[in-house]
Length: 495
Ligand code: FRU
Image 1 (tube, protein in one colour):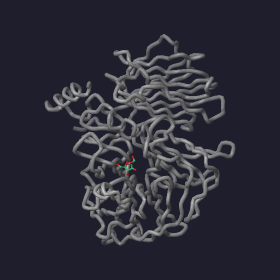
Image 2 (cartoon, rainbow, N blue to C red; image 1 turned 90 degrees about the vertical axis):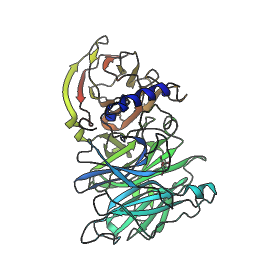
Image 3 (spheres, rainbow, N blue to C red; image 1 turned 90 degrees about the horizontal axis):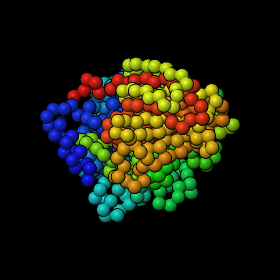
Image 4 (cartoon, helix red, strand yellow; image 1 turned 60 degrees about the horizontal axis):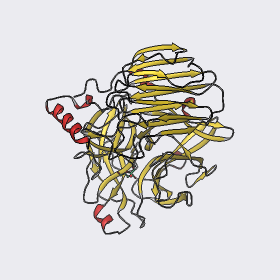
């Protein structure tokens, strides 16, 4: 109900010319589309000195609809320029999630005059076929660009990989496998992952499957990614899979497995489901292709449980911050770690350190902001971020539960979904006494990276006005050291 007057008000302001990048709910340091609906990041690739972010996009509404690939580029992973729509739905269907590769060897033959083609590998989802219950309505297709992602040509031989009759058969992530000079496609096939190989991106051969029996009935895996890391001299493969429902809190979430991959099959070290992010609002995340040893992860900052119902103005949803992704061996188990990319530092406008702040003290800041805590002995503590309307979000660590937490039960509007308001816990993985914690607050989100990102949590909320007051909540001892850095908007010069 509140949406009607709110939307009316916001649209009115915009009619009178307010720049949409500074409307109340717009995240100021996270990518969001200028207008329209957005979900998964797609085709993440570094190419000719630019990061490309394609995304599931429906330009005509703020709810999900016939999917396009939107497009944005960035030189520093922070400031984004939205480009024209890259891929429109066509007679084969909507353009669902997928990936993009720089075909440097021109294996596809799409390159002309030595121009390296950027090739998108995506799922064509045929809504007519879906209605007829054919079970063959998701097929993999190609498109290529010879001008760094601005103009695209769909391949005349689409689709290149037809559904074998599986209802869920989508989200190809393709990467070059140098040891065997071939491409590997990692694909979500309902309750399992399938691997295919190709030497030209056009003809695909099934190699193997992973995960049969690991997914509970009624759930599906989506948006997989397979990447290799060098961990203390050992090659470790990471398989990322998003699951819906069945996430770490409620609704959707992203889990991972570590193991070996030999160009044919993936064998996991164990079958324990681990979460890349323990909060409710990091979904469908994958890594950028072509970034060498540095792996950069980005997710969609929402949850299918309420994604289409959260308060929105002329656009809906944002991406998580781009994050450096690494792997750490703790007692023989490999865990993911994520922290914001270093380019975030460039947004810092003002930075102050505080020592042993008393509970009563209010520290005022102008969001968005980064909070860096250093605790030589981790103990129960919380930080309370609040606004003049009395709304607040609290984040910290609970000794008894040995868990980090974010509490958004009093964070603002939540009547769009009964399960939205609440407190979410993430079991601590690290066992050391000391702890370094980074929290990044934007208008409608908090991302917490604890213990170097071993435990990461991402949460959305919708306060009436941005949080700009920090206080220490229940804490066993005053926090020893906290640095607060205000961050400049990435949309400063945008209209
Ligand atoms: C994940 C997902 C993908 C699909 C896309 C459709 O959020 O369901 O599996 O390709 O969204 O928009």
